[in-house]
Amino acid sequence: MNRNAELYNDIESILLDRDEIAVKVKELGARITADYKGKDVILIGILKGAMVFFSDLIREIDLPLDVEFMAISSYGRSTKSSGVVQILKDLGCDITGRHVLVVEDIVDSGMTLSYLKGVLATRHAASVEICSLLDKPARRRAPLEVKYSCFNIPDAFVVGYGLDFAEKYRNLPDIGVLKKEVYENI
Ligand code: IMP
Ligand code: MG
Image (cartoon, rainbow, N blue to C red; front, side):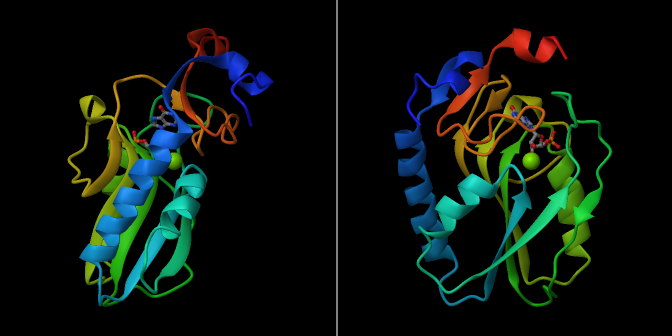
């Protein structure tokens, strides 16, 4: 999709371009390949936001690995976390003794993933680490170690490359800052 496409009309500015994202995803894949060599690793993609990042990242990891998905509740039609976390779709497998890498689109307050990490910790994995495409460290409200991330970004609401606002814009190939009037009118 080119950047004059109609979907870009609601975008104030492009924060991360598809080419710079691809470079970072490749670097991260190489790092994960080195760190998990010889380990039984399972990557858990968090639906729906991480789907684009997840599908690019797994193709940059040169290891035999398993993929699984979980869905957890997010913001609904708001731009702030409600603090109420709910598992909408759970894993279809046992993670006992396995190395788990949770793949997320963005860590904002950290509340969603710190809750999820707590849940996974009760399931006797060999390790549980977090891998997020984006991190907004300035907004953190829950303590959370994000071992792998591609970009730290400022406090702005972004969409594209899997990230949505009210379920839209996930199919933008770049990551852009959404125009304020778009979410203030809801
Ligand atoms: P947290 O619990 O506040 O860390 O929220 C994390 C979730 O909020 C992410 O998985 C996203 O679904 C959503 N989110 C946070 N910031 C943004 C953003 O800038 N754009 C789109 N979704 C976001
Ligand atoms: Mg999400």
